[in-house]
Length: 116
Image (cartoon, rainbow, N blue to C red):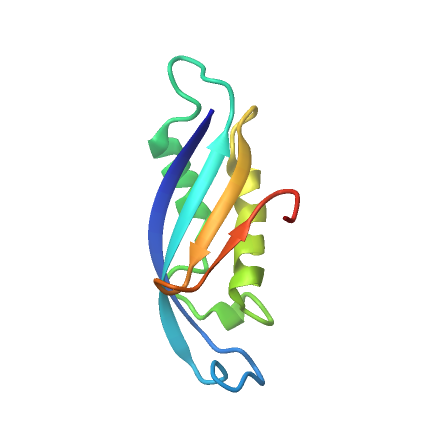
């Protein structure tokens, strides 16, 4: 079974050498985290526990300059970084299935473990 948790966070960044995004600016990101596992004691994972894992993964990212963490802070690089951080914080038997990261209401990226 798959469960999903959505959170919002804000970050600033610039993309060195990019014609439109080369100047400092910010985004109000929306992140959807999809995890899967067997239902045990009525749930795959407690939503509060998943929220905490996500919040810990956002340390140094939420309300920060992404250029301090990533050399090229594109949505693709950010979602890959977040995937690695979230995977480390999930309990045994729970797998990260997908991340959706939206930097605007019309621009987003989807991460899946198989790279598709």
